[in-house]
Length: 295
Image 1 (spheres, rainbow, N blue to C red):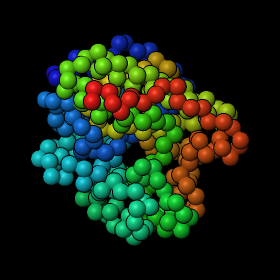
Image 2 (cartoon, rainbow, N blue to C red):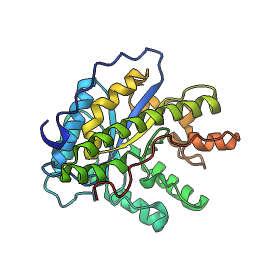
Image 3 (cartoon, rainbow, N blue to C red):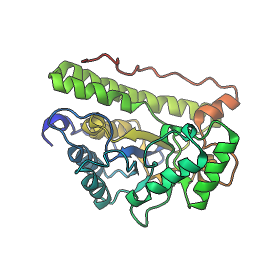
Image 4 (cartoon, helix red, strand yellow):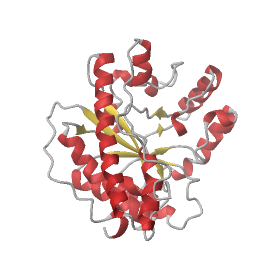
């Protein structure tokens, strides 16, 4: 695709993952609209580029929709329709992307209900907490979990991520300024952060559990995410990962508290599992872009 999202989306040939390699499920939050866009780019181009990369590599992905993001933009229905038409599932990420602790549990559940019309009928019932916040108190946590369970939801956990959202605003600014050296640097550091996230997750999982869990990767539907999606998929394949859908990943027993919301607990986290065993959590080796870049 031409423009800000094109010209750099075709990966080098990658090595097929070993049949027994570690598993990874891609999840993409904040459809239909995430982050600022470079000049000449629109939301439909972003989602079409992401879909094309997934299709070309035969990789499944689970999307999560916030109906309030871009609700008044004429392209938003087309973005969601394109995702659905590609055979990619959509889960509920709440309507307004509000923090669970910003109001009452009842208000939070009502915001989830308000988002239901944006989730295609017949979709598997997956919910992703905004900000990954599940309640500052046990009472809030358990009330919302009970509400989600009553609505038939499972929670999409996160066991791999690298703050990909932090790269999208400077990408838009640098493209607007025509600073292609800065854009190239953003691409390189984004992919380096993606690699580092995988290394850290595997290190933590094996140190804590003695094995690789199937990893659930958190991403967002942003412009730079789209531009480098094909290369990121190739990178992970070269690292030996094989791609699976969210249900396959979360069939692992590690995810029981995300699947069974009748359990009074948080969704599983490798960081919490490590902390419970006194294991140090490795810090990211790649810094997020400077907030002032291309300002």
